[in-house]
Figure 1: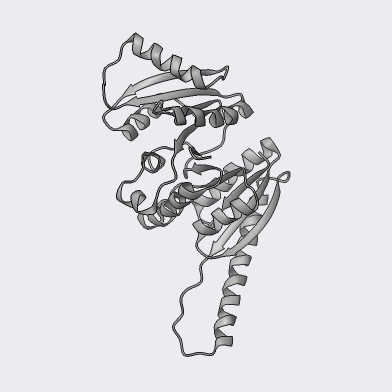
Figure 2 (figure 1 turned 45 degrees about the horizontal axis):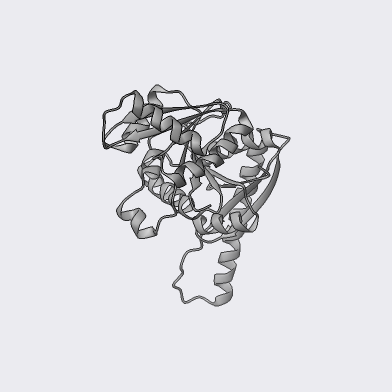
Length: 277
């Protein structure tokens, strides 16, 4: 993992996500792309064009000053991680995707949510758009998450072929840490299981994934997000991984994905793999 992209809005949640990324970068000797995107307001005015351009330049300089100040603060936590500062103008989610493509980022690490309801909507919706369109893995870091290794990674699976094929990307990630990989299937249909069902699930997983340290669980719950949340409360894990499709924007609003609902409920990072990759 050579390059980690960290978009920041300088919030406490974002600061925590960057610190988490620093710990990952230190382990893998990765480079961190520390990016801030500032939006310019739409101005309706009678002043001259030159005055408006001056205002935009002042806005850029203020954003650059904030970025450098934030970078200096992050340097207090590390002296052995390489940074590249990137300042962009425009919608943060769109600029994040563009930079991830341009710089061939291996992973995007960003805050999943924030403390207040307004911040939760703004940052949460931005994270949702990045998850939807990212060209690489995305890790959403909750405000309370602290890096303490990756001893156990839980992968939530529906046992479909494309999902289990995608799980090999999670296995590769787990291999970097020599983590235990736990497959979790939340069954919201039959709700009753016996030993033969568990054997069938185990056999199906092993058809697609070869990893030395893995095991599986079947959890029954009418609501899949509730089932995942309940499991994580009882099974200590360092990361939850999920595979998801790129979703159309209107679909994402009308029917929020399980991935988004789970990201708001867990205090551990959520690693997202796109099934299309």
